[in-house]
Length: 391
Image (cartoon, rainbow, N blue to C red; front, side):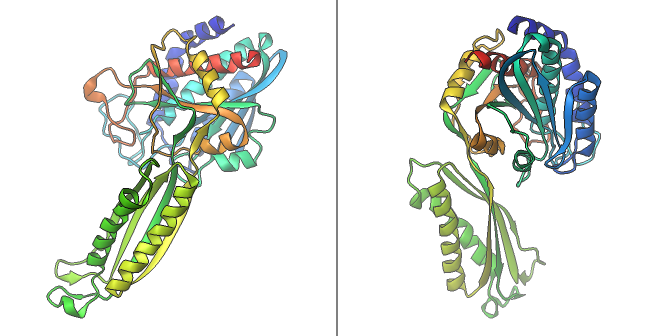
């Protein structure tokens, strides 16, 4: 049956590419993906597949019931884009100013839609039920996974599989990891209030730029000197704003950044240490502060049995030339919430462009993928879905 599925996927590969390129040209930001959701819903309706829209927001869930009894397998793809200007010189370049699919979610969606189409053609001969979760708003916390779960997208599901096409990993590679694979992703905002004044008279002010600069340096010592070196963690200040004329000492300054961790105890510790350091430096500088820490997605923690099963499924895909253990990845993913509710695993599918001059990291204005990776992802997810009934 897997051979039949793969043949259908190969026959529909050009359609997969067309879908991906259409979505790439028409991206929508997180929580604004109404047209994309409508496109997905219409695709399933044309197939005659049961579909539910507005699941937890803009989410879409389709279900295909096999002709034989079996387990319920869920597969997930996200479909939101990023606020980035597309700088690629390609025919399918984004037509929306300042918005592009710079992370591969367009390809995730195309992969899952065509896989669903192939499974639908074979449904009478297949066991169990297949749930296709098309998730909105992965890029921006609180994300779409949690509200979709609360709206029942995992009801009755026995296992879930998901993949992320990875442009920095060679095509033909599947990367897996048991346990934590992607980090908890948090955000912080620190607002400093001092006393502004003339740049020539610093002694009459409380300089928030100097205070904030000291704070940026001090925060780096949390990971380097206060967290156990065997525990991975990141504290990054991504924005430092204190806009003034050249001869004005800033009255206020704002730092915004992110914290990435795998261990919940380390997560709690860093949150507390950041405020302790902020309080101490502000006390020494005679400035006041506001400290806000926003919990983002938890760490993605894969289940061991399902991950080892995925490895065996990937071995059945001829185009998979390398199966390797992934390094811990400090990026975040709200697939974490699914794994807190049901068994499953999340893995990376290599998608590096053939042209070395076209290889750019995720969230880059020139980001692109090798579209052949979509077929590999579809076959791997398909092998996992069909074979799970025998597992």
